[in-house]
Image 1: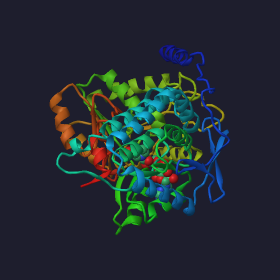
Image 2: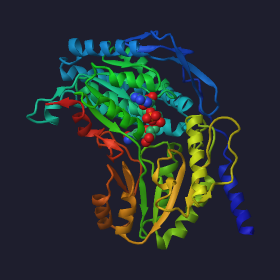
Image 3: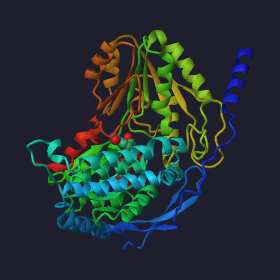
Image 4: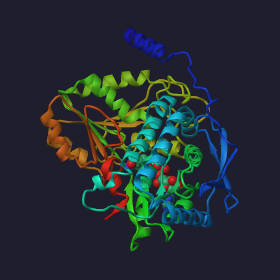
Length: 489
Ligand code: NAD
């Protein structure tokens, strides 16, 4: 009892940092945003706008245009015109100069972009500042470098652009997903119509301002806002040559059905339910920290989140104890505070979805653990959650929750954990923690996942391809593979 009280005191003091809020002054957010078409901000033909909010406070940040079919058509026409008359035939070295300029401007405005990403998306400012925005700039730099070297990327194959790319992205890494889509597409001579997610349009619209200032020829990048109907109109537009979609498996399947029988190329980056595997010879403290990073990073709003933890039986008790202790020290709250580890859930709808899974987990007989903390009174927040006593067939271990929720199961042998890890409709990523190189090689060759991290988690680099198996989609983004998705031979 006394020990528990001492621990509680220790945890409470660990959480009591003086607030260190990031200033909002760097972020200039307009009261209203239009559609970015042909290098200009244009009022929507639909005449409609919708609100975009801060999920940590529920306050309105701005209102953005809602593109209808006619707006989508305008954007695609602008992209087609720029493709045929300017961009396709521009020498790669010239294209590269524009992309390098955009990359430098992103770096110069990194602080503003990070603040807006956090205000609109709910992720901790530390993450937007130290992870998202640097990765965004790196992607533009990386693909700018390829623009005049495509003949070396694909020797003796004469790569040609595809045409107009329709790009649809989700809300969990808004600007990063935009960079992953736009940079390789325009480096290879394609033009783009991008639609950000309806809850997080603001950094994409800031990128539109940067693109306008950069002098990129009008129509090469068009950014239109709206929800599913806008995305659907873009997918179904007859003059689109390529669809690059990142989002849920459900919408991915819908898109695939919609374009069946057309010549449109696609890459689909969909959901995930990654297994993170700890062997008994792993450095346990390091592994526990990696598991925390793997699932609680960005509130678990990560397609490759390590949401299923498998621990070798002999160290199960130790790992669970250490995870619980670490959970007690995590700081959940104001995403603009530099101390915050877990920010706001992106929307009320997503919070309701996560809470639904917490109920399902308990009803399935799993044991739920959450730290004893208070959540802010306003906004959408969820305590980091661990489920033990989980069965492989439980919905919480099979379905993507997309929130800060971890299931824990044990295993005895390599073969058993490989079978359990692969027993999922998804196959985006996985993690392995062990001291033995031979085990790493054994698992990485047998795990059916697009990315397998060993003794680390959630590492991204523009030179590394990323993408899934099975219902996690197909096609790769990043690296040379990412270029390949935007050329024909
Ligand atoms: P979502 O599928 O609901 O929406 C994604 C985008 O598609 C949004 O811009 C949305 O407006 C648009 N959309 C919705 N209906 C559409 C339709 N019928 N036609 C065309 N577009 C449509 O996904 P979400 O909730 O925004 O994002 C979460 C999902 O994204 C999770 O499943 C996550 O795993 C996945 N994701 C995958 C990756 C990856 O690289 N594999 C990366 C990030 C997120």
